[in-house]
Each structure stands twice: as C-alpha cells, then as structure tokens.
Image (tube, rainbow, N blue to C red; front, side):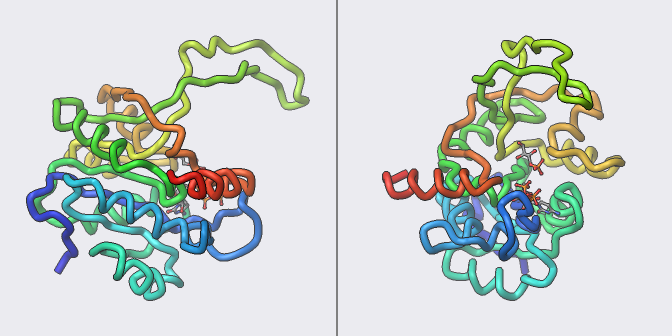
Length: 231
Ligand SMILES: Nc1ccn([C@@H]2O[C@H](COP(=O)(O)OP(=O)(O)OP(=O)(O)O)[C@@H](O)[C@H]2O)c(=O)n1
Ligand SMILES: C[C@](O)(CO)[C@H](O)COP(=O)(O)O
C-alpha cells in the first residue's frame, strides 16, 4: 500500500533525491549529506509534510540507498521510496509512476532545496488548483548576464528583465505532467521544460530565497546559517 499523509489532500509530491552531488564535492549522495546534523532529504521531506494539502510523497533515492532512505524517513513522514535513475528526469519519471490514485495535482521538488517553506508548496499547489496546468516558482535575476563564446569572449549583454531563475516545487495538473513525461526524449533540467514542449502554458509565481538549491559548498554553508537563524 502507498503511504499517505493527508487522505483528504489533493497533492502528491515527487522528490528527486538520487543525484550524486558532484558539484558539492566528494561524499555520500547529496540528499544524504548532513545539514545541521540531518540529511538534506530529511529537512526537505519534513517541510513538505508540513504542507496541509499534501496527500502523498514519493522519493526517488539512489538505488543503493533504498533501505537506508526508508529507515531515515520513517520517523519523519509516511513516504514511498523508489529507485531513481541516471538523470534527474528519469528519477522524476520513476517517482511519477508510483503516485497513488487520488491526487489531481503533482508537484516535483528537489531534495536539494531542503529549506523550502511549506507556504511555497501551498502557493504553487493553489495556483494549479485555481486553473493553471503548470506552475513554477521564480525569482528575478539580480546580476547582469552576458552571453559568451567558447573562448569566454563576450558576445553581448542579455536583457535580464525578461529572465527568471527557476526553483521547485514545480506544480502540474497530474495528467499534464504524465503526458509530458510520456513523450519526453532528451533529458531536460526541469519538468516545466517538458510541459513547454507540449505547448502547455507555464505560469510563474513568486519563489522564495529560502528555496535555494544546495549545489556547491557555499550553498551548504549558507543553508547552515539560515537554519541557525531560525529558518
Ligand atoms: N540522477 C539524478 C540526478 C539528480 N537528482 C535530484 O535532482 C535534484 C536537483 O539536482 P541537482 O541539485 O543538480 O543534484 P545533483 O545531480 O546531485 O548535483 P550534481 O550535478 O552536482 O551532481 C536533486 O535533489 C538531486 O538529488 C535525481 O533525483 N536523480
Ligand atoms: C529543477 C531545478 O531545480 C530548477 O532550477 C534545476 O534545474 C535542477 O538542477 P540541475 O542541476 O539542472 O539538475
């Protein structure tokens, strides 16, 4: 039987957590690396479980860590754990295949965005509930952005007013995400990209600085400081 949090909830969350974390440096798979003494995945799942409309959570974990991840998350929340794939997209597809019947809204959320506030989870879900087929949280781009060539010579300055930095959770009407993954070819870096290829409009909503992705050692240090400050 599939694990459930809130049987009345209408949201399933897929948590890709099978990445190696190469950019973070040598060590355990990134989702299992410690942040203030607990794995990133534990922080992420705890915050997802605190979002009231979440019905179920499916985690895509490294294939060699399935039992360890089940044991780790058992005291945190009822979750289903499946084996992830070689690319993020394959991990999301594996988790999607394990979503139980019921929820009409599916969110995809990186384990690496461990400090994402439950309020952002609810905001993305609410936007899908209100009628958008696909919703992504975004932040404005704050740096000047240059396009360069292979020799690192500047080709030009990009108009950043039309650019957005994209976060997760990304939210979808379930049938739209299922259709997008069914026809997916080359791996893309996010799920909204697959939906864009179907020609389905993707709505942007305000993201959160706290939903930063732990990618490099600096991000982990920043996340430690944020937790120490009570985030
Ligand atoms: N084959 C993969 C690759 C990534 N992910 C997950 O996708 C999220 C976003 O990926 P990223 O932060 O880029 O993680 P990694 O791929 O682990 O990072 P790196 O590229 O540095 O190895 C992470 O929660 C990661 O665990 C996954 O489930 N399966
Ligand atoms: C999905 C994502 O978090 C949106 O910013 C991001 O693309 C995943 O990171 P990756 O390093 O590209 O896998």
